[in-house]
Image 1 (spheres, chains in turn red, blue, yellow, cyan):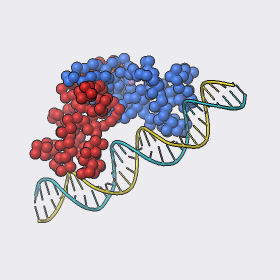
Image 2: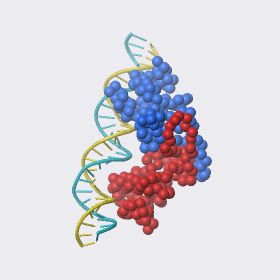
Image 3: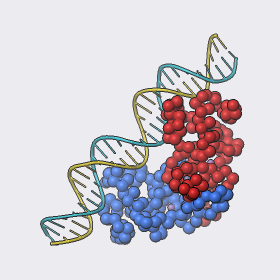
Image 4: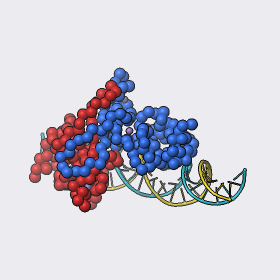
Length: 138
Length: 138
DNA sequence: TTGCAAATGCAACAGTATTGCAAATAATTC
DNA sequence: GAATTATTTGCAATACTGTTGCATTTGCAA
Ligand SMILES: [Mn+2]
Ligand SMILES: [Mn+2]
Ligand SMILES: [Zn+2]
Ligand SMILES: [Zn+2]
């Protein structure tokens, strides 16, 4: 199994819990909240364990946090070379206001902006709200 | 008092609670969370009333919500012609990672971006993290 | 296979926010 | 100005999200 390798490469133990969680995230193809994860795997694993799994994956650079405009926390697979020392997820996120799906726009960097005051920029975060492909035709 | 007028123009009753809250927001010059508001006015007004005041001001177009990258909810004065039908707060927000202050960059619009998929864009949200003027020299 | 470190489950707790309802207050009508 | 009506407020209860402590289980390496 490839997921096991991915977990090991990030210095975590590939437990059944972690394998199932990661399988779910990979399959989802979008950002998933703890609540949605719990709805899927809550019978099998404890609510708190799922919280800790998400935290562990985030720290390890396997998942990254995604916020929509209402502050809802979701997680999504890291694509590149994130690890426990650094995340590299500075891409745009899209949030569908119809179905509430949120996902990464991997290949679009967040544009730089000229801000007038003498402020030091460290990072940028950007969410685009709109209608996704599925909801458009419906 | 000018604040009274502002509240009335948005079809709300200018109670002492609302006047004090609005005075605080105007003075603050930055985004303020419910907790910070409660720390200032909690002796005088009920915690829940403050929640409802913020909600009422938001619905009326007097305040708008601001989220930082950690999902913390703050509110800030609306500058333009927001009302109960529409908000017009599509500017960038700046969050200082040192002092946690968050404020509006009123005069900088959020840049448009070309997203590849056929997604319908409705609005954009952007937060810049960095170091503010005060913290820079410290 | 034994020993140790990491991971899990359960219980308790913390922080933030919402809802129902009765009392208080503001605006409107007389 | 007093009576009537609608809005606002305070308090209690509740919900939701997330964290922490601790005993038990599991994975891994010696
Ligand atoms: Mn992403
Ligand atoms: Mn703003
Ligand atoms: Zn959608
Ligand atoms: Zn600062």
